[in-house]
Length: 293
Image 1 (tube, rainbow, N blue to C red):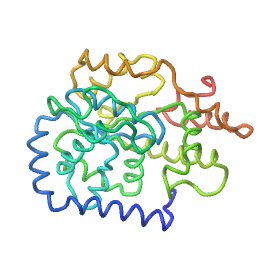
Image 2: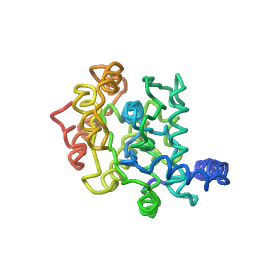
Image 3: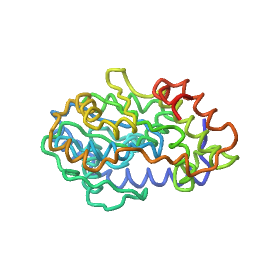
Image 4: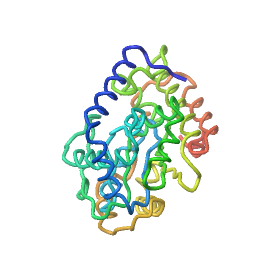
């Protein structure tokens, strides 16, 4: 397993400590608010995804549903690591979703603006879309899974958002200085490090999540090609109404084809074939085999 460098470990530790401590005096009130606000919730939704996999788009689409609030990278598990209960974090997740809805561009350099983001008609689904942080925390601290289950006011539902590995790895390599600081494997080219990190996260994705009935895989390419079908699957999985206005808003911002980042980088000989061969080791990546390039 990749380990944190001392500098990165100190930065992560300070970020977690200050964020949790800043809100610590309000834990009691936040817990009461969370229980009242989300007492009829169908699901608490967490993502298990590599960075640059399209899960931010998926989170934005879900947050635009009138009955859902998906926080933008609050890192809910960091709070649980410092002694919080999940029900106490739910109001902060909703607050995070409201903040993200006001931003033209989010810290990652992208933005998805849909009508209805940050607004909740009926509080039925709440979640955190930071798939990378959730994977890393669960892999390094497995005891957090039990704390999630014990302190959640609704059943946990897990989303594995995936994108073609060649495009995903290429984008990680292009953004390697701004993501996963301290957990990337050392040595090698940017593409080699991105490949190693991608498959480390894939190992954790394979181990993560709950029962199959509460785990849904969403392919980025399928979401773009058949949005009505894929959004219908997502709504059914989370117990949400398939709202026609929501579907129309989502379809309006989805482009028909994915961005092929793989064409923007220089691969070493045999690297693409090696990556596609390895996809067969993972059920959620097996459709991206050598026959699909």
